[in-house]
Length: 130
Image (cartoon, rainbow, N blue to C red; front, side, top):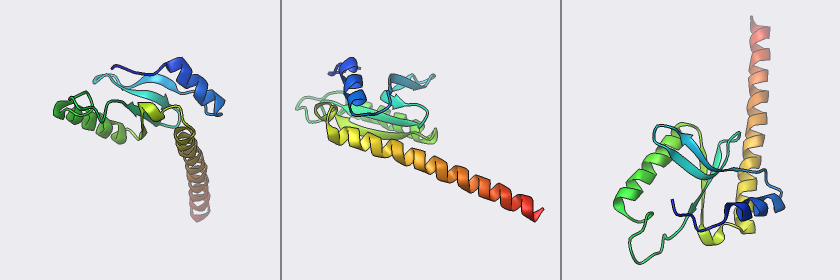
């Protein structure tokens, strides 16, 4: 789709903000060829940059058919465990977006540690019970 930003510039901005490098244009669904603008694959966190949402003339993100396709993409991603963050082209390289990404990646890391500890705790309690 018609991106209005430079991927190398965005990657450099994310690196400058101390974020791990995302995969640009990551295809998460081979059959439907759906892709995220940027994805942190291991954490299943994606960033979608929405451009032209306030355009007077109908564009990709404000036409009925495109909105329906976007809903299908979002639902398939959710079924596969992805968390999708959204921003506008104009806000992509801002500290607000970088902070949102950082909080989401940090939350994922904390949740994974807690889940591992809970699994370990359950395993230990099962060992004791049997």
